[in-house]
Length: 346
Image (cartoon, rainbow, N blue to C red):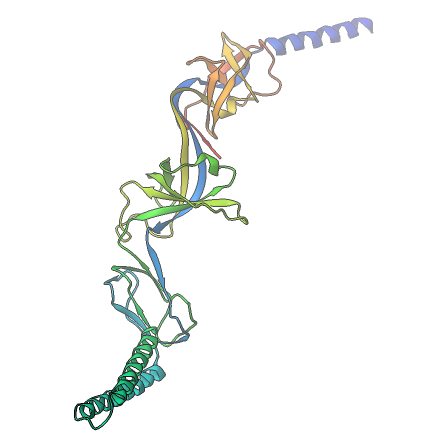
């Protein structure tokens, strides 16, 4: 019995030694060099630099809409009209009263010239004519409020009304954009806004145009934030920004924006999954060693190492908790599929 126990203990010890000596298979990747980019992440939408909604001042039924989406319009062009039969009648009434006042004024002037009436009568007639003229202008202005007129040359982005539809006062019927280029309006979290300044470089992308990047810079930062969303609006000027209807960017597209805070070229980089806190495991001469490192910019794919590693050293990817200092291991190189740069986004 004792001999069996001794043999079992020896077998267990031998198995432990064999397990310790048997090389462990680990995935490895080299320490490389590349740019380390720290950026503030935000989402935004493409919009015209100048966008004007057109809405009536008073409620009514649309009599006509004379512009379609995508149409180019000129300043002063009538784009839509609200039914205004009552105001048309008011203008005619005021015009008739003006004509009567003008006739009375001319007759009084002749009588004053012939000295049949006093000059005071002419003053009264002149005042009545001026009042009638003012009434006509007021009635015409009220009627003109029911016409939606293009305030400048531009393009119709959106049409939200059809003839016969009843619209409320202030309800947008047409949305116009001036010929100014497109820009991006993004929302930046209040924790990150202190790191954003006017003139800061921005890299943008959109899912609508995969594989394409757009360059820009911060043009404006709103001085007042939104207390509900806890964010600040940042307007980004696009480099070589297209016109509103030039494409391929279109108004309303969602954009992912990376506002560059810092960029360091030729930085030491490792795959982020090689890091375990502030340490990595390095494979040297068939054995793994734990190495304390000092991290810089940390990204989803790659991270910057400021000290503790040298270019070309092989680090273990996703190191297991069972790794021990000096343990033998066989490295399996992993093909680089991640970007050759570290990009930290907040």
